[in-house]
Image (tube, rainbow, N blue to C red; front, side, top):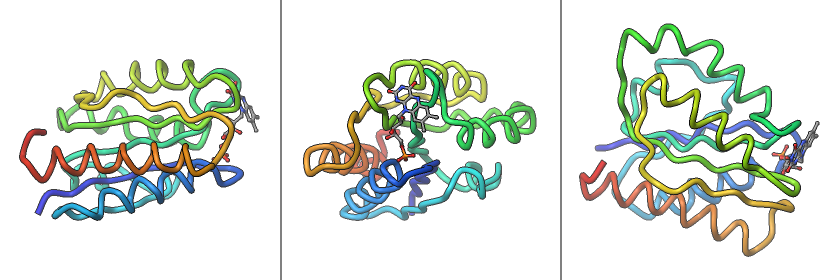
Length: 150
Ligand SMILES: Cc1cc2nc3c(=O)[nH]c(=O)nc-3n(C[C@H](O)[C@H](O)[C@H](O)COP(=O)(O)O)c2cc1C
């Protein structure tokens, strides 16, 4: 069975709520869904999955430190593996989020991984609307895996 890894960092809870909403959407499909905090995850988590959803806040115009820590620890070991797996990105932000998206895309292109869904930026915290958007992103990634598109 294909596996979707949802890797998230969250300081005050919004991104975690989005990651859980994405997981709940993804679980409607016939795939395995794993939710992991980025600072507790390692390269084996990525090796074991077929697609990753990175969910992170934007801090100071760029990727939040907890997510960057994951990339700092795994980038060089991953180069030898040439993973090339599918990924999507969700950024939780106050009023922007574009810096975190572009920084993440730049880093992840080096692993390399393939971006298979448009980046989703959710501003202003968790609400019915933003949680639904997160859920839909989880559904999109899971549907692609179930259908064998990614
Ligand atoms: C130290 C710090 C820096 C931040 N910098 C930005 C920023 O540059 N752009 C932005 O849109 N939001 C910024 N924010 C707001 C967070 O991205 C936003 O509140 C996010 O939803 C927090 O996610 P979390 O609840 O999962 O920690 C910042 C928040 C903190 C605490």
